[in-house]
Image (cartoon, rainbow, N blue to C red):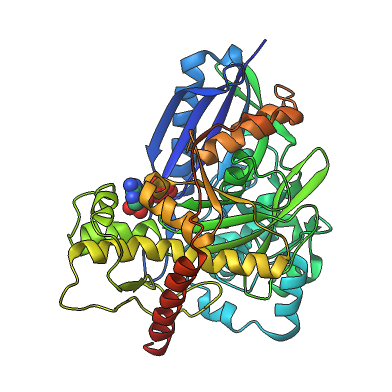
Amino acid sequence: MKKYVIALDEGTTSVRAGVYDTEKGAFVHRAQQEVGQSFPHSGWVEQDANEIYYKVMYVLNDCIQAVGAENVAGIGIANQRETVVFWNRETGEPVCPAIVWQCRRTGKYCASIGGEVKKQIKEKTGLLPDAYFSASKIKWNLENVPEARKLMDEGKLCAGTVDSFIIFRLTGKFLTDYTNASRTMLFDIRKMKWDEELCEFFGISLEILPIPVASDSVFGTTKFAGKEIPVAGVLGDQQAALFDQGCYREGDGKITYGTGLFMLFHTGEKCVFSDSGLLTTVGYTLGGKTAYALEGSAFNAGSTVQWLRDGLGVIKSSAESEEIARSVPDSGGVNFVPAFTGLGAPHWNSEARGLFSGISRGTTRAHIVRAVLESIAFGARDLADCMIRDSGICLREIRCDGGASANSFLMQFQADVLGIAVNRPQERESTLLGVALLSAVSLGLLSEDKLDGRRVSEKIFMPSPDRVKFDGLYKNYLMAVKRALLSE
Ligand code: ADP
């Protein structure tokens, strides 16, 4: 019996793959390759889709060789979301650079979308008009890349998110999964199909888009070492983390503490729409059922710790921030607002910039470091409050992952500030594991009812019962945010 599943995580800065042993319930081999980015103009971010593909093939080959192609049951794919690739349907060759999710080149255009279209975007796709999502990136390529237009006129153009490009190159099938489609601003998240009116608004013909299918589908087969291997199970990276974290019920939530902070909150089988500017998105589809999630993000989380290290030079490593923060009993009244690139939900202000407040003669490096770590937790409280208010659903517990979740001071402070337990798993490569699990279920190697008891906690951080104290600290943070908004 083939017991291995290869999980692929095509991220923004690296491509990772892991061999998941479905009997042991663990990864037995991993491979990783860095992927470059280019910044041809201010605010533009591009990648070479061929480089992505070659690095994907490299890590897949590495993993498949480690256990033998004959023992591999299938490949699951998780990927950076929203990024757009254009390629030639006949050759599979990319037509132009991939426009990465962070790219702001269509920012002005998206800001001009208002009225009825803005309303439709929210009602149908769960999103807000923003350059972050794929639609305006596709439109930009169609208007600015002559080769793309020519191929489109000849019926040979494929335009899609990174998952669809990898699936196409591996299997020859032109498909995307629902979670990735839900990040394009073109996809009706209740009807589970491209919305013709929105496609028309953005000038995008349906023929150039992949066919959306459920995340737990078998997408096709590919060949490695002469052996046919199915590609089964595809999810956007944040959704894969949600899946791994065992967030299978309404009220389950996870926070990924990476460069930025992503919070996803499972709202069951119903779409919840936010009044605070949070996004409604497809969590995953499994066995014909769709789980929806509310999503909120803070642009800067771990990046503030990087800034302490590389910008201010007050710590030597990200990990050192924990010990330094613990060396003082509190932040000494210092608050930090991490608005390096504006503030997201619920403040929504792209002009606001960072700010320290409450500095006195007694302020030390430790207070500054502590205030910076605390600001990450306060940013998550902003999002959690919106989610609870908008959904009316009670948040039971937060499951954490990502680089900065290694910081136990931060996780304890997070539990205290939220008043909710923070549960840290043993395996923190959540994206990779999430898609490994989905792939195993799709291939029939793991039954759905086994998913629940599988996640192993490493530590549960219980919240302090002193709500007055921590609500007070959060209020002080909100006062500092007010000042940051005033100073724009
Ligand atoms: P990404 O996938 O966004 O690149 P990762 O999940 O790899 O991010 O996390 C990296 C981020 O986590 C960096 O910004 C780093 O500063 C931060 N980080 C890593 N370890 C710690 C730590 N012990 N304490 C605080 N921040 C940390």
